[in-house]
Length: 317
Image (cartoon, rainbow, N blue to C red; front, side):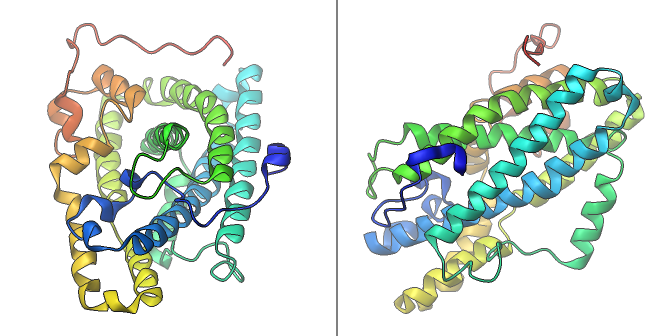
């Protein structure tokens, strides 16, 4: 947060915290039944939940994977790249601090005792998570997840910066725009680091290992993109503040969960436009039929398999 300087001036609660299209209820018929005040509060809650998710993924997934890989012989052998990983770890730690302070500023009543209000994981989920993170050089699907997460965060930050308030709620708050601007500057380099990690570990793995990791990637990604407890808790918080919405609370939750099977929604959120480098690597490593059930947009404008256009590492990474 300190690197934002005098931009850290406070939050304007009359503005949304996200572009409307990045909130799930917006993609259901129920969103139009909310008043402008209810839509704004829902949007702001989604912004706080998104910040929590960013904090968790950057600290509990991305940084822990990078720390494990720092000591791998393939990384130790390239000192310049190892320094890049160390810098990336520092960036992700700073991002976590930014989003934590932002949530405390936005909703002090929700974050008085904990950094997480909406995101919750059970014991078995955390155990499985930790086991996978012990062997990222072998379980390379976690490196794919790093790339997907970081590239999608770039899409979100870009959308925040391009949001000029054409929707019903007006433009995104100024401080949040400043934070996403800083976040985007770092994520551009991080994506190329993720690509290099895939080149280093996934590309050189055995064919059977590639198949296993593809299956794991599909299973985990499908689980991640199914709305669960956090999104339900956002709706429940909305209803607590606006009790007149109680009669349609469960219907709103069911409609939101139903988006997991909505092909149009999935194509809009996870496509060649939102994840261009990820899809380019999919083209390079997999057949479309391997991924169509998880990424419906994989068949959109797919280049010829014999010339997918290999991504090269940026000169400064």
